[in-house]
Image (cartoon, rainbow, N blue to C red; front, side, top):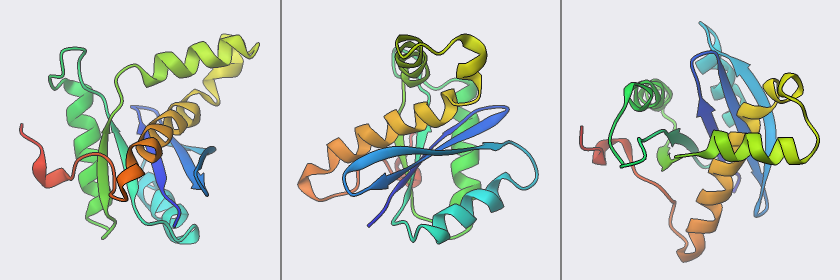
Length: 145
């Protein structure tokens, strides 16, 4: 069954989907009034099992303003009846930037695809963590504030 991962930022939401055991960048959704509806549509269209939401923790594992934003976003998606799992995404955006730079993309070219690439890294981690047959990450109700 397919899975989706998102990298939710202030301006954009990067989306990646699984195809078999591969993570593929899917799209970038502009943050705004229709963002949740667009993500729900992708979830239903792909008949996905769950959505992994990147959880941006500080380097020491603590919560930041970005962590709160990601949790709030995840709660809005969960309110649509979609199973949500939170994946520690420390440094995924930096890793995505580095990979794109190595692929010859300049900063302007990266802007359009960096979020979907970061979502892809989140999904790759989740898929690699599922070797025991269980969903990776943490449920929303297990977060300690």
